[in-house]
Image 1: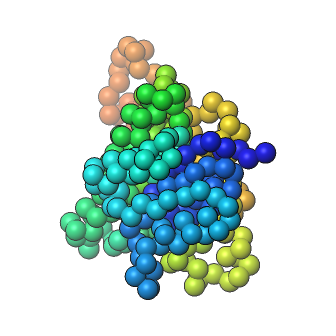
Image 2: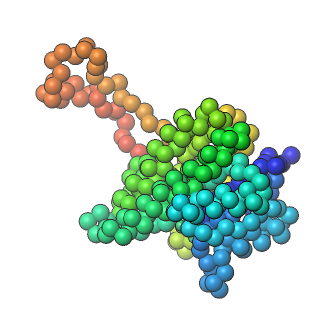
Image 3: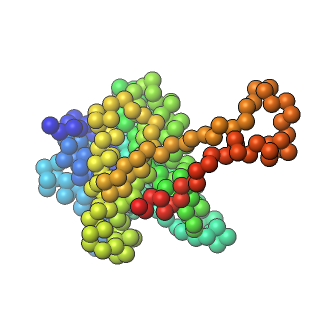
Length: 287
Ligand SMILES: NC(=O)c1ccc[n+]([C@@H]2O[C@H](COP(=O)([O-])OP(=O)(O)OC[C@H]3O[C@@H](n4cnc5c(N)ncnc54)[C@H](O)[C@@H]3O)[C@@H](O)[C@H]2O)c1
């Protein structure tokens, strides 16, 4: 049985890559999909139009939206398109993203601003009108795209990492604010073959890292398969899926139980302050 019959899904940056795979799978599961992307192919056609054509060719329902979702006008028009075409907005996947990699001292303001705008400000611009609609109409599910680059750090990506870790904080707050209204909010840290990485991978690795595997995790997140779960961050790559969460060390006691507390005494109890295991690095997610 189809998992998303009667639902309407809005997906940003869905003209190719992960977003296009989400659009195909969600449509195959019965959702009507608004495929957003401002990108064009080599022939000058909007990639969103091609994805819509492919969805329709498979018997699904989809419409293209080609505005810039990093602006408030673009975000509002994405919701307007969903409502005028399909009458609802049950699922939002904030997926659009760009990279402008530079080591920090070489990072200019334009590359900082562009990456923060598309990867993070877009979440404000798109989610606010959709969240308001969901609140008035019985709830919904939002998936915000983060990256292990932000969650653990990756050389040369201070702009992208700041935006992607920002997506995690954004989700944490929206999960709290949406709970009463039945709005579930997820963070997704995906890894998949992309236009950029495909030439560096052999065929077997490309198949293993296909965006379609991540799409299955997204389907789990946005459907009844995940029940009432909200506020979680899942890493998804190949067929591997795991939750990423913040953990705390035992720490030194506060609340007046530590009267001699100062910098010197802190140094003496360091073993309690830090967790013993090594921090995760980006390489832990390449396994
Ligand atoms: N591929 C990976 O391994 C990986 C890893 C971690 C995080 N991510 C994140 O997952 C998401 C999808 O990644 P992907 O590899 O499919 O990337 P991709 O570059 O193939 O697709 C991103 C799409 O977003 C679109 N886009 C960019 N700016 C836009 C804007 N202002 N308005 C509308 N559309 C816009 C682009 O045209 C592009 O089609 C991104 O947010 C990316 O940062 C991907």
